[in-house]
Image (cartoon, rainbow, N blue to C red; front, side, top):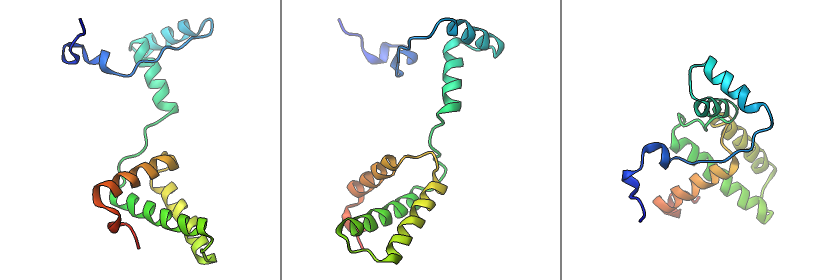
Length: 128
């Protein structure tokens, strides 16, 4: 009989990942966890968060979407071979702007946000 998700404790609903640890690492994690007064799981998650921080979300979404839309339009022109040197420079500046606005976001995440916005608002809001 399958359990109802609402009957499961919250920790069982989180992503889980099995990791094979090299010899001695479990003891090092345990010692660090004890020193920081947290569980081994919390110690591992804290270490991973330091190394792999979540993307910043304090940048207004509209600002990101506008920059992403401009990148998409210029990239399409570039693919078609119809860009001018000014377009190429503008594209470079937009990539720099995106890197400054949200340095932790990968290009794929920008493109995903743009696709979501297109689906929500329709293509006319973003085409020039």
